[in-house]
Structure formats: C-alpha cells, structure tokens
Image 1 (cartoon, rainbow, N blue to C red):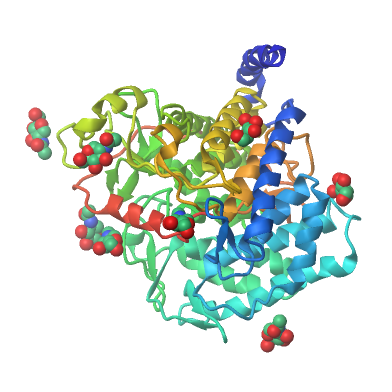
Image 2: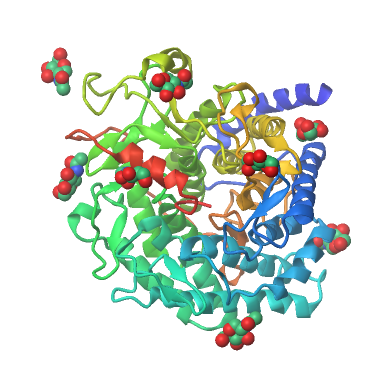
Length: 560
Ligand SMILES: *[C@@H]1O[C@H](CO)[C@@H](O)[C@H](O)[C@H]1NC(C)=O
Ligand SMILES: *[C@@H]1O[C@H](CO)[C@@H](O)[C@H](O)[C@H]1NC(C)=O
Ligand SMILES: *[C@@H]1O[C@H](CO)[C@@H](O)[C@H](O)[C@H]1NC(C)=O
Ligand SMILES: *[C@@H]1O[C@H](CO)[C@@H](O)[C@H](O)[C@H]1NC(C)=O
Ligand SMILES: *[C@@H]1O[C@H](CO)[C@@H](O)[C@H](O)[C@H]1NC(C)=O
Ligand SMILES: *[C@@H]1O[C@H](CO)[C@@H](O)[C@H](O)[C@H]1NC(C)=O
Ligand SMILES: *[C@@H]1O[C@H](CO)[C@@H](O)[C@H](O)[C@H]1NC(C)=O
Ligand SMILES: *[C@@H]1O[C@H](CO)[C@@H](O)[C@H](O)[C@H]1NC(C)=O
C-alpha cells in the first residue's frame, strides 16, 4: 500500500521533471526506480515456465502446457531453451544457465525434418546464441568454462554455414525457406521485407565475432535492395515500402505495407544497425529517418470515438487502411530509440503518443490484454468513404469507449506492448510506464497461466481469455519475461540507456547484442522538426486486412 502511494507521487514528480528537462536533447540518463519485489515476481514466472518446459518438452521446441506435451515448431533444435538463454543470464539464474550451456553443444544443426525459415532461425537461434556469447564474454565474464563458451560461437557458425545457401540466388535476396539434409532452397519466387531485412544485425555480428566477412556481406547485399527500392511502386511514401520482392530481379512486386506483420522489423533494424555501428550503417539511419518522417506525415490516424489516441495506419500504394496489430506496437519503442539515438525529440514524443495508444488496447479489454488485430474509423477522412467504414453493429458500444474494435481477439504471449513501455520508461524514467507494465504482466499472469506453464489464449475480451490454445511460444521466454523483468531491474550493462551510453542493442527477439567495438551509440544529428500534417490518399482499399490475418496465423511471419 505505502509503496504504491509513493510510486504515484513519484509518477507525478517525474512527469514534471520529464517535461522540464528530459524533453530536449542532449538526452541525459533519467533517474530509475528498481523494484526488486516485482522483478522477483517476473523471475518466478520465468521459473514456472522453464520448469514446465524442462519437464515436459525439453529438448523439443515448445511446451504445450495444458496437455503437458511438446511441439517441434522450430525444427526441433530446442527453440525455447535457446530463446530462454539470454533471459536466464540477465536474471542471474545460474541453474537454468548451466542446463542450457550443457545443451548447446549437443544441438545437431545439420539435421531437421521440417522446413527451415531463415528469418525465424536467425532471430531466435542465431540471435540467442550470439547474445549469450556476448553476455558471457562481456559483462557476465568469469562465470562459465571457456570450453562451453567457445562452443556457443562454434554452434552459431555451424548454423549460419548451413543457412547461407539461402542467399545464393540470382539477386542475392535470400529464399526464406530451406529444406535440410543437405541444406537447399525450396525455390520461392519472392521474399518479404521483414524476412529479408531482419538478418543484418545477427549476420553482421557473426562476422564481427568470427572475423569471417562472408556472413555480413550476404545479409548486407540483400539489404541493399531495400535501401534502394525499385521500381517506384515499391516506395509509395518516402522510406515506406511495399512488402514482397522478386528474388530473381530484386524488384518490388507490390506497394502494400505497414509497421506490422511482414514488414515491421525491417524498419526496426534500420536504426538498430546505426546504434550497432554508426560508422558502417549511417545510410541505414537515413532510411529510418525517411520512414519515420513519412509515418508522422502520412500515417498518423485518430479514431472518431477517441481522437486522443494515436495509431499508425497501414497502406496499399497510397491508400490508407485503418487497421493495426499487437505486433505493430513495437513501433512506439522504436521511435523512442530512434529519437534518443539521433537526439531528435519529435521522434521520442511521437513514440510516447504511440505508447498511449498501445496502452488503450490493453486497458479496454475484459482481461486487460490487447488483441492481435484491431481497427478504427479515421476521424479526418469522409466517414462514408469505402475505406473508412464504421465498426460492425455488435462492436459499436465497445468502439465508443475503447477507440478501436477487435478483428482478431487472440493473444499469443506477444511482447510488443510491454517492450514499448520498457523503452518509454528507460527514456523518461517515468514510473507510470512501470505501472502499465505491471498491469500487463499481472493480467497475463492471471489469464494465461495454466497447467505446467503459460498459454496463448483465444479471446482477450472474454473473462478468463475465452479458452487456451495450449501453446507456450518460445518468445515468451526471450521477450515478454525479459522486458517485464528489465523494467523493474537495477541498471546494468544490457539495459537500454537514454544518454548514448548503450553497450547492447536488442535484436527483434529481445536478445541483447553487444554494440560494435564497445562503441557508444550514435551521436547527435540535428534536424528541424517536421510538421505532422497529412497528405493525400486516393482509391479504396481491398484485401489488406485479410492478408494481415493470414500473416498472423502463419507463425513465422514478422517479428519474433
Ligand atoms: C489434450 O489431450 C486431450 C486428451 O488426450 C485431448 O482430448 C485434447 O484434444 C488435447 N487438447 C489439445 C488442446 O490438444
Ligand atoms: C554467477 O553464477 C552464480 C550462481 O550460479 C550467480 O549467483 C551469479 O549471479 C552469477 N554471476 C553473474 C555475474 O551472472
Ligand atoms: C555437420 O556438418 C558439418 C559439415 O559437413 C560437419 O563438419 C559436422 O561434423 C556435422 N555435425 C554433426 C553434428 O553432424
Ligand atoms: C496498387 O498499385 C498496383 C500497381 O499499379 C495496382 O495493380 C493495384 O491495383 C494498386 N492497388 C490499389 C489498392 O490501388
Ligand atoms: C460522401 O459524402 C459526400 C458529402 O455528403 C459526397 O460528396 C461523396 O460523394 C460521398 N462519397 C461516397 C464515397 O459516398
Ligand atoms: C459480431 O458479429 C459477428 C458476425 O455475426 C461475429 O462473427 C462476431 O463474433 C461478433 N463479435 C462480437 C464481439 O460479438
Ligand atoms: C501469478 O500467478 C500465480 C498463479 O496464479 C500467483 O500465485 C502469483 O501470485 C501471480 N503473480 C503475480 C505477480 O500476480
Ligand atoms: C488468406 O488465406 C486464405 C486461406 O488460406 C486464402 O484463400 C486467401 O487467398 C488468403 N488471402 C490473401 C489476401 O492472401
């Protein structure tokens, strides 16, 4: 009781402090408020999830906590163990760390019976291994035997050596799908910008750690097609792209996109590469700036029933579609990180507005958890436009107060909303974001906890979540539990910093990768603030939402 009164008082004070002095660059490190009690509650949830996984699923990929069995949804290489690795390290969970350390050298990355996704394998397995290696050879130095530590990097290299055939295409754009034994491309004709553009951090890091330049060259060559998109169809707004690229020619085949599934982490990595190494990746940050400026100029949308909320629309060519996803809420944190990295307050402020919108998707439902996909009616376009429809009759009441209506009510243990609270908190020090993270974490803990772990649920707007899908995603370990922990944990080398003193950058699966050469984050470009007015759009929209639904159903599209 006393504690929460103090926290509320601090929230008020910090808001004032933020408005007074943290609002303008150069950004300084704000005061933070670690909370061991809450950090330990998150550690307990990690332990429950791990114990269930270790007993009923290890060394398979994922736990089915209701039926106490497993699923090999990520090639059977122990996805949850590798995804839990960096979280166990950061939590200082020595027992789990040694269980995973023992396991890593035994994985046979040469062998799998199921199709391999280059993207999913990169962000979960390669990212998990490289992060553990960076943590154990960096700030956690001295806790593990050097033989076991060098096996981590050796396995990362073995895995990448098996995957690299994906890039041996006419254009150098990888085929995202491989069959193994031996590794070979399935022969896809196109690949999407998220699955092309979310490799470059992990593959560059592998080259920087091993001294073999090939991995970085492969990923960066593919990325070139996204940095210089062709033809014009592929870049409907400056910096904002279509989705699918022809693997033979490197040409975009559509102009549909968004900050959600299928596109998301391409934008995310543009700024993160600059944070990783501002010398090599300045061009990447310039593309991120274009995308950020266009988003603020063209995509900002406010719901008719809640004009106080800010969401980002998706697009087909230059026609907007007023739909968003849980996945897309990462963009709030990405704008904040971009603003801190480039000393640009308008990006930080905009990111904080997006955080408020994401919070509304959680606070409005019966479980206190946000839905997978939602829509709204834009308040500045004609309400009779065919692409700006009102909600269905049975959600009119919900829309009036919530500011969105639900088109896919599931929750699959995704991290993006808590992830963005984390960035908001690290940037501002405002304990309000800790409160929101605690609300989200306790809601998830209350609704998704079942059997031997935590499960995806079917309906965030039904008491008790409308039933369990009986699946504990590996990113529950890597992301939800990590961000929930870090927002209450003490300062540390891996924490995101507001003041250009970052030592790590998180990959899209929340695995912290050590910044190149111990270099500090990129410093100080000055820009004039762009106006937030909006531009024109034309024709009516078709099919985008259906496609978003399809992407979301296929695990393996978009962010981890
Ligand atoms: C769990 O197992 C029971 C009994 O074997 C089965 O009827 C049920 O369909 C299973 N549940 C799921 C979600 O697979
Ligand atoms: C080293 O391991 C011990 C126990 O396994 C743990 O308590 C301690 O926090 C670890 N130290 C670091 C720096 O992780
Ligand atoms: C995997 O394949 C590589 C290259 O052929 C070989 O050197 C290695 O021993 C194999 N590893 C296992 C576990 O089979
Ligand atoms: C987007 O542009 C392409 C190519 O010009 C066209 O085929 C497609 O119909 C357009 N989509 C919309 C919604 O206008
Ligand atoms: C919408 O309403 C306006 C004004 O009433 C009218 O001019 C316009 O043609 C209508 N548009 C559509 C698509 O019905
Ligand atoms: C609203 O009605 C549609 C169509 O009958 C139905 O599919 C949907 O589940 C309903 N949604 C809610 C929230 O009741
Ligand atoms: C999480 O759920 C468990 C089981 O219902 C409960 O014992 C625990 O207190 C909850 N933790 C928090 C922080 O609410
Ligand atoms: C979505 O998936 C359904 C069923 O697989 C398919 O029929 C439909 O064409 C897909 N829609 C889009 C836009 O990809």
